[in-house]
Length: 310
Image (cartoon, rainbow, N blue to C red):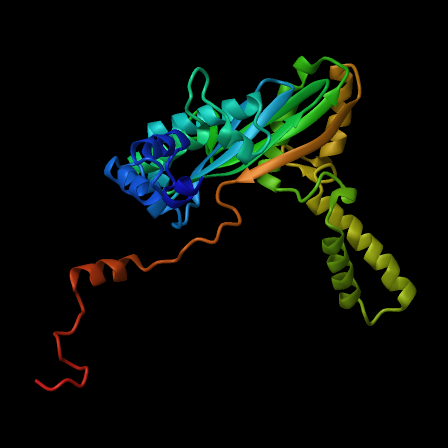
C-alpha cells in the first residue's frame, strides 16, 4: 500500500518491485521508475476534467460511469474508450462504488480496473480518474438510458438513467423511457418531485419570494409565496416539468397517457444525470503566455531594466 501511494503503480507491479528489492520501499520506487510504471504518480495532481461518460444496461439494471482525463484528445483514444466501456460493463456486473469497481478484475484476468487505469496513465501520459459511478435497478419494468454528444455507442458527454417501474408490458417502455431520459439531459431537473428537493434550496426560494413582495399585506404574501413555489416546482422537478417533446403536457401527464399502452400503472421512481466534468474546478491558463515564456519571447536581456549595473 505504501509503495502504491508513493508511485501510483498497480498492486501486482508493486508486489513484483518489493520481491525484486527484498522489501526496500525506496529501491522499489526506483525499480518501478526504471520500468516506466511510476509515471502515474507524477501526473496525479493534474486536473482531469475531460474524458467520457459511459452507460451500460441489461434492461432492469443499468450503470453509469464517469472517467476523466486531462484533454478531450485522450477521450478520442481507442484504448481509453475501450477501457471506459469495459469498466462500465464490470460495474454493471457488481461494482456499486468507485472503490469497489477499482478492485474488481477484468473477466479472465488478474488485472484490476484500478491497475489497468494506472497502466493507461503511464502509456498515454495523462492523469485519469474514475470519478463517480451510479447504478439503478427496478424489480419490474425498465431502466431507460441516454447518452448525449456520443462519440461512439454508449460513450459521450452527458449520461442519463431513468427508472420506470410497471407490472405491465415492459417491452413497450423503450420509446417513452428514452424520451424521458433525453428530457432529463436537456432540462436537468433538480429532483424527481417537490419532496426530493433540498429543503435549504426551497427555503431560499421562499425567502426570495417574500422579499420581492415585502410591501404587500402578510396574508397576500403567503398566497403569493405558495403560488410562486408551485411555479418553481414546475421548473425544477422532473414530474412537473413541461415535457420537452410535448411542452403542453407535464412528464407526469405523458406517463399517465402511456399506461393504457403498457396495460398497467407506470411509476417513475428515480433518475441520475452525469454531465462530464461538472463540479470540477478547471485550471485557467494563458496558452499564448505559456508559449512565449517557453520560447523566451518578451524576456529582457540579463541586467536590462532590473537596476543592474553593466
